Length: 401
Image 1 (cartoon, rainbow, N blue to C red):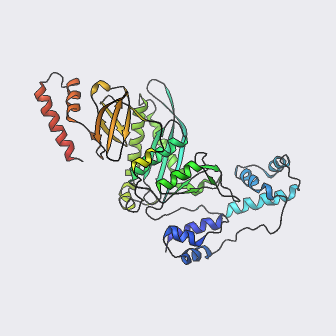
Image 2: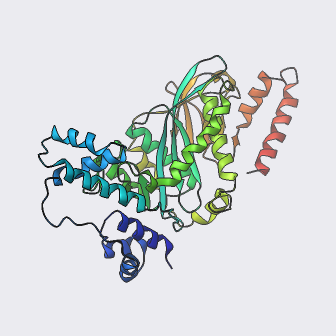
């Protein structure tokens, strides 16, 4: 049994949507008769409006206000100002039917095939305080693979469209592939018109092209129905794990590192849903993910440079891995230029270091390590001793690729 298709059909029935069997079968690689059979099992009647009603132009507004907890009386007086000239009793009956239908609906937990689906959301305007009492207002980007429950989490300062696309690409790199479809809520950077019971979402033209270039299909939640993306909503609660780090960091870069550590901890914890570590299941799921597009295509979407502040270790971080520089750049702001195979570190207009892109946590050039050691605890040692120590350290790093 294709459980993922069956559950999708259940959701579409509950939302009153008649599927295109052939299109779903093509996208999910199955026979259209399978889709039709699952949809027709235990059919939930689709609500149909048999004759015109004075409520028709206002049904979307009414549903949205009901989901926000508004009373029938308040909605009635609200739509009167928008031109409604029907009776309040008709409106009350309709509101009652919406509430009854909502009580009867069960929230569906999506179980998806490997590589099929991911969900995206933000934890917005989270505030953390550093050791000096400075308040940092940040956003946390969240992307979750449906099968393995592997999460990609990134700290951002804003939530504009370019930031969203860059964070998604970083997530694809972390997953080592692209899921076939991604669910979003009705965020303005993705849709120009929100989805409701009576109208489909209108995807933003720039984001639509981005989705085509990356290879995934956009799915939008119905407004005010967050159950559709419940896995990401549950993940947002895990961000409470950041709260104990108040007064435990100094800079934004340190806070970024804390977020990465939290992500790695979560992905190494057993998931309650699967009873497995997400990173273990990712090893299977990434075999089904779509390949990443080439770097040249990715670069077309970004005009802002990738900037980093050089840490006290004399390193910069990219995709959770660290790359070395000369110690004289500690505290300086540098730009990163990334290709499919290498990373260039630029200060001003000068390329000050070049590294191969790596999956290792720490990536040193020997001359950088020697300079770092000379500037720190080994500054009283002879040059020969420092160079010998640096060589041995690099050999140790090579063993743990």
